[in-house]
Image (cartoon, each protein chain N blue to C red):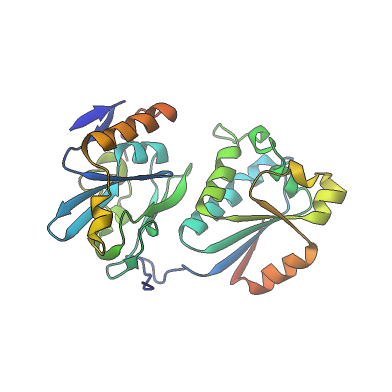
Amino acid sequence: MNETQTASAPSDPAGKKILMIMTSGPEDPDKTYAPFYTAALMAAMEIDTTMYFLMHAPELLRKGAAEKVPLKKGGNLKMFVDMALENGVKLMACAESCRDLCEIPPDELIDGVKLVGSATLADLALDADSVVSF
Amino acid sequence: MTILNGCEFPDDRAYFIERTQMTWVKTDGDLLTVGLTDPAQTRAGKILHVRVKAAGTARERGKPIATVESGKWAGPVMAPVSGTVVEANVEVEKDPGLLNTDPYGRGWIVRMTAASPAEVSALLTGATALARFREILEKDNIRCVRCQA
């Protein structure tokens, strides 16, 4: 069972790898929704999708933080973080950013987040078919 | 037809209910037609884009047969059973709103064969399916609406 094509798309992206780099945090709510939504969609398309959070972006992954990020059309970011996780998006937070910039102890990150070093970003970027930065 | 919280559930369907998935299955000989249920299309909201796996695509149970985007929700439509897509409904790709306005009719997503009769038998039907839907509708406070295109 390995044939994967869509009815209308020229080719099926299933099995490809995308790395999404997040640098914006709760200070810019308008920049937070689209990346999680897009990542959730990519994962639903069976693309191996990883979001890497550095600089102030790990603040979005602090327990209780997404609930406080308002969205223009109402609601908050939490449902999109949950949707991304539900669809299988891998969330990785830069350990240095968490420790030195955001001051987030590991146990204050939401469940499902992997704390990784900066060198992992290089590995992920070189391994991905495409890298998208927000 | 049974109606719960304004959500329609045709009696002639079996249902696949797992995690966030709520799809219907209608058996016609060896072919299964699959689509979104009323609460599934309501929860998604006005559907803007649909991509359906092409005929010939083999799928394991629980792997995507389509992806759906509504602006507030993006996710897969899972295969309710293992099998092979025989026909993809290209009409819903041209007019995704059919999933909202006619989920049990013109909004069908794929026709497929089933690899395992046991998986087909395991789909929920009748009172068992309705009890499960009642539980989900109450828990998630879902009242069905049909978004117009």
